[in-house]
Image 1 (cartoon, helix red, strand yellow):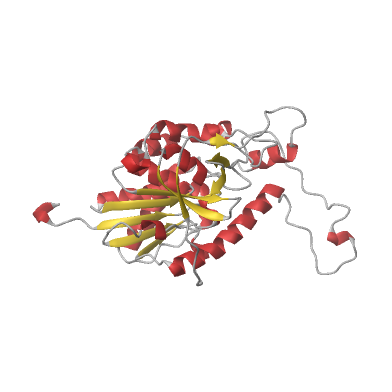
Image 2 (image 1 turned 60 degrees about the vertical axis):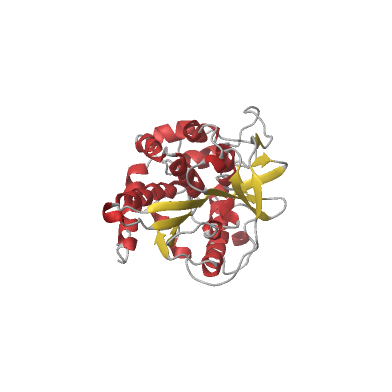
Length: 333
């Protein structure tokens, strides 16, 4: 920088939140424009994905590709896993990311990087700080009920957001002037508690969890659920849910009402995961608070709204600018 002034070095902790993770791109753009130097990046789920792209120097190329996606494009990229442990395998969704990341190793990146995943069998957090970059990111984005988990080194791995939605602690080993965390669920940010220490793994090639090819009887409810997230793309119309014969409303029990019309199994699972993440987020931020917290509201987008890159990147820019200027974020509709 001019006059020999050293740029402000920041450690970044990027949270998960599906398509809202596009906002991380906007945050990083603003930091670049204002002359901040990223000292290290730790990410969970979409935070791991965007952080990896930035550390590899390919984030802007990915952003341009994402801005071109339409609802139909995103639907074509989905590869439903009808009888596997997740709504989609994410092979097609992840293909562009894998192309941009190539065969890079985490330890060779110019910026220290950590991808956070969850070992489902051991119930422990896993940090990827060495080994192939792309498999580490794929493990971190495997949100239960949406994207199938993977097996690495014999461990069944899923989304790091289950145990660490905003991995601030993973950045603390790198000297920096300040730590910035980005939450994609600002409604979750109150409370206190601590967290257990993670294990650290290298990332060899990923072995997808065994599943079944398409065929036989398909889960029509799953098909309707996935396509329903992108309303208007197909001619398929979802019928309102009829009360089941054994529903509590038919058992003579008072105080119960039917669930909202159209609510499906996968949506209920998503809400359950978000409720868990809300509690864990509060605990984690209380245990390891950042110097600056940038937030994005959950209502900004649904988890699979990957056709809304332009709006969400801009939202990230707006929220980052306000936070860096010490201003309250503008209200969200």
